[in-house]
Image 1 (tube, rainbow, N blue to C red):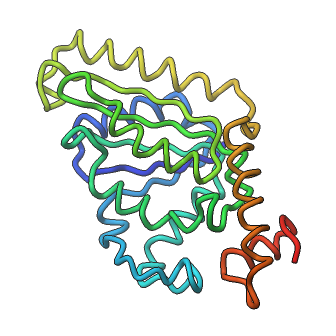
Image 2 (cartoon, rainbow, N blue to C red):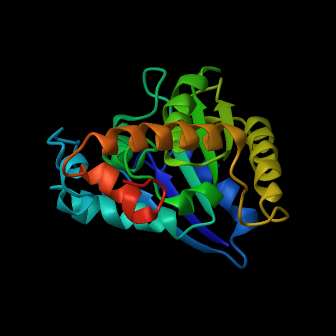
Length: 232
């Protein structure tokens, strides 16, 4: 199994240990590539729209974004691991998601994403993991991923892994490893779900209607034409 891990922080704290626990049962027989943000993507999206109107290959940050995107496309399982900052995912994660919008269903989706599985690992001081998970899950769904699982850890006792009680760390480990073991038994390829299928059908109709009114197809509509998903 090929696994791509996107870490929302370079700090080797609680998030790092939770992610490590998740990967532990999966390492044997797996090929794992990890990215640490912001080191592996130190730029925010400029909003220049070059990706939308021309090509994502011309993005001023393509040298950073494309290795991450290509690793995601080459993976069976995509793992996002992020702490919760201000009830949301880290700004570094948001910067990556902004760069990937060009591959959303309404623009230029890649059909390889329809067979991916994804896991979102978060941790918060209390129990409020949902906002950070939604940030990532929303983008993954629009990228075409149907099988998305979320696991949020409420640290409760503090913010440093080595300061947590052994009992608390053991409880977290059992919970995380239980989820990980699911991916040792499920088929590597996921099925496209109903929600993603409906989004694709809706955006297909949208692109079909738009291209009929264009003398020269936009970059998005030309992509859909080249894929054979719509016709002139």
